[in-house]
Image 1 (cartoon, rainbow, N blue to C red):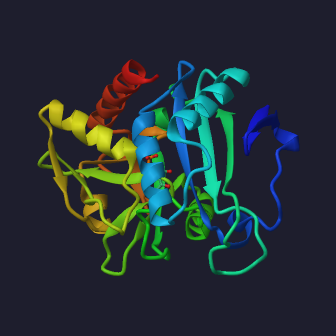
Image 2 (tube, rainbow, N blue to C red):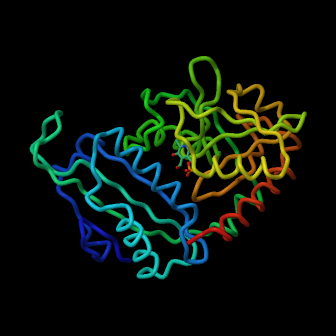
Length: 283
Ligand code: PLP
């Protein structure tokens, strides 16, 4: 496997950064993940726009301009022969003597790699996923896609140990914020697709945005408002979205079946619609 580190393509096992890198010491960095389908990048402009927004929030300047980043992503896809999978890229404030304040002369670190993954024929799309809810223990700027992911790691591990595939995090008022690495949706018995509005409480999902636009084009009603765990358990259907999972039906929440406890028809349809969009627009 070939990876990228600061201007150089290198075998993955040789791809290394300093132990003084601020990504390692402080989680002082941001990342992006884009899906690859048919060897092409899905909705990548949205991912790069969000990367720029995350960089701006940390007052970081990318060591490579965005068009060059796209070339790096494409090179990783082709050099690794990825037909279906994802590209990960991360920018940190670089290596410097350990001090909380920004260093004066560090060069930001840019690393990237590609992974093979079954996206289209995902088993979870057939079976649906089980959700465990956990308190949302994260900081107050969840809209930044930072590499500080400890709360999400612990949330996902709790889900895994409970036999679930994703954790939905819940705020202090009892409303679902989002999944550990996905956006949370429900479909009410009145047929409204409901998801929490974008704010500093959640990451603005690229897949969320595309799915909402597609649902709107289909004439489906979309409501942006918070929902509780109880409302989700009572909903007709539930689903999640993320770049590397597209749309996945949710079949249970904390052991309670959602709807009939099997993947819902509307969620399956939204997956198919999103997949068509992804394939048709990937570049
Ligand atoms: N929310 C969180 C916390 C995430 O980590 C992710 C992606 O990994 C998402 C939502 C979904 O965002 P996207 O659809 O852009 O992948």
